[in-house]
Length: 477
Image 1 (cartoon, helix red, strand yellow):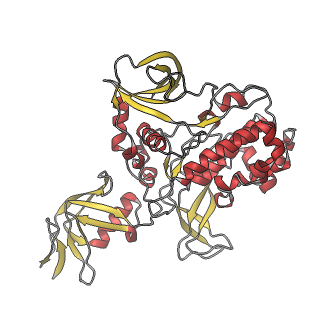
Image 2 (tube, one colour; image 1 turned 90 degrees about the vertical axis):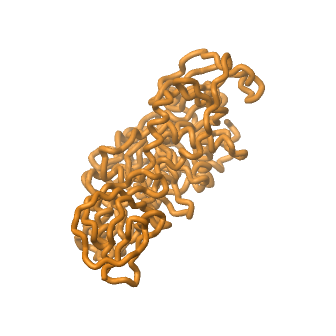
Image 3 (cartoon, one colour; image 1 turned 180 degrees about the vertical axis):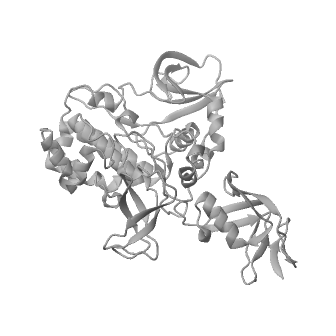
């Protein structure tokens, strides 16, 4: 007798397999989104179904839990393992799976917008265009004393249809990497609203993270109301041609790291750390440095699972200047051919050169050090990539120049830097005939820019480095 699952999810007996084809729709149980559609025989083995799902989604068989009408499909203790496949299955990945990411995770944190009251907001001027709308300076009638802002606020105004378009894009990034034509826009407006909503409720929110004051909507737009930063962004300051004193670079760097450490502590990976995304609360002057506001969470993601497992991502988002080397994914399917490093262990995650980029892969269990093998592309963790991007910001502030165009092997500056280890930054500066700031500043930047992500300090650890303990510099700001 063969074991199969009937259309109501119960296990029943069967005397002969039905060889008729059936289309099976597999959905993620958490989000309800379609993971894949399969065409298979009505009566096949459960392991073969899992293999088909692996081929379509990249989820390994041992990490799959399949359900029909709420009942898990299992044939433990029963042979042969022939099942009659239900036309709709739900898929759950096992706890601790580093690929169990959900780009819609922060959507559920988004506050529902209230209707914009007539006469509440007066548009004063347009500050800048945004990817999904525009940023305006407005006067908020009645808020003159509430936020100590004289009623002046920034409003990011986004079309409601744009917001709604992101509600369907809550899937895992590995699937999107393997099916690039399905990838949504990298800048997720609903994720930004969700994170701003979450942060706005935190009593201990550092002042260096942009705070949302409210969210409203009218018939056409959603209005994201935040504090108004009047001093422009750090990129404009770095590009002004005026060299910043090291004490000011230290001041801005510490504040960026405080903001970043807070995000990481709360499981948020930014993925677009850049000088363009760091605002100043007032105009900078030569005697007094203003304070920063880190913003723009549209590319942010959940950095760890509910169980604390670091999550792995695959899309190359953010700006070229700032992106960490491991965030450049090779345009291949699932595996790459490499020589296993001489001191490696089977199952270990290692960094390797592939198609002109440096990516992280997991060695197979049968890998032999120094021998050829096929290794699975393993994506990247976001917090170390954020630290790398922050280091690029610090470098540009200090030396008014980017390090390279992109951190890939074909970039001459990056290749030069990579070949010199921790002395790479100092050697680049000497080759460019640029003055080196203090050795403790250079030491920190060099550690944050290490090519291997596992060798970089965390944002919190950076704040404990000696550069920030230099009371002489700190007291002068």
